[in-house]
Amino acid sequence: MFLTPASSHVVATAPLAWALQTAGHSVLVASQPEAVEMIQAAGLVATPLKAGLDLMETTAQPASITEQMMSSLDLNDAEEVVRITVREFVLPSLAGYTSLEAAPLVEACLELIDGWRPDVIVWDGGYYPAGIAAHMTKKPQVRLLWGRDWEGMLRHRLRELGAGTTDVLAEHFAPLLEHLGIEFDERMLLGEASIDPNPVEMRWPTGLDYLSVRWTPYTGPGVVPDWATAPAPNGRICVSLGLSYRELADDSDVPIVEILRGLAELGPEVVATLDARQVAPGTTFPDNVRLVDHMPLSALLSTCSAVVNHGGTGTWSAALSHGVPQVIITRPHMDYPRFGEHTEAAGAGVHIPLIEDRQTMADAVVRAVALVLSDPAYVESARALFARTNRAPSPAELVAKIEDMVRV
Image (cartoon, rainbow, N blue to C red; front, side, top):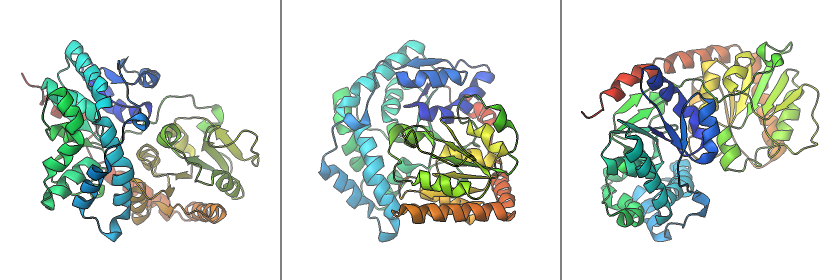
């Protein structure tokens, strides 16, 4: 059984679910009702959880607990991305998913596990109600990471600093666990095992053993139109800001209109996977700019010479699998800067941190795209980077390790 919080996470869940299903196992993917269609479109059996949770509506964690955690981490000035990410993303998510409002979600997971009786539970990293429910049922459980292991980093850093890891983390879990009548256990945070699809050199030093798996270039279902099945006469550039930001955040800080108009002047066809919230209806572009609401990037990128993206895991890995040079625009949080830095250091693209001046930012992106299009070394480096990351085991090779976890 897979427990995943949102439709944007299905693309990370599907390859491993396919591998288990192909090996002869019954697979059920449970999520919020709005994700059911995406799960079914991936060829998997879906079920909606009977309770959900909107993190934006949950009660905020007391400031004293947040400050205790931030102080315990003892971050230095060079770790600003970590500071922003932990304070603004990791801790609010942790607080929401371990608040009393999460109790119905834990109970929905428990009811589903009790009824379907899976041998192993695979849950998305950061989806703590699923981890809590799996722990309560004493079923073997595996945490499936998407980005880097922020929870593992917190645990390791607090332990190294002697900050009483269990006590600090337990403060976050306390309201929900007291309601459920159980005590904190780190498996609720980290699972019994962790599957990590990220390049080994990008991992935090956590002290944990990871089950490595290669990224499978799946970016969702869809139809690829005829024009996208062959290279464009003057080349093709893809622009994508990812599904996660489209669903969960505001990307109006990216000067997308200016970027598209500037890229059009380079000559190649520009295909942007954007919707009406990202580009206002009526906005005009040159004839060589195509706007499409959604298209499977894993198919589109096979005909592209470059891709502009936000450094999201799904888009990054899809581009990598086709050896396409990347120009990565990043905000100063989560894994985006690290993916950008890693790509640039490998010579497989250019990393551009987002700045406020929209035209200056757009001009920098256009110059970077022109650079990767003109220098064949970027393609060679992108292919070499893919070859290195593709040495990790495939999802099919991971099946036996998951089977070994089943308790007889």
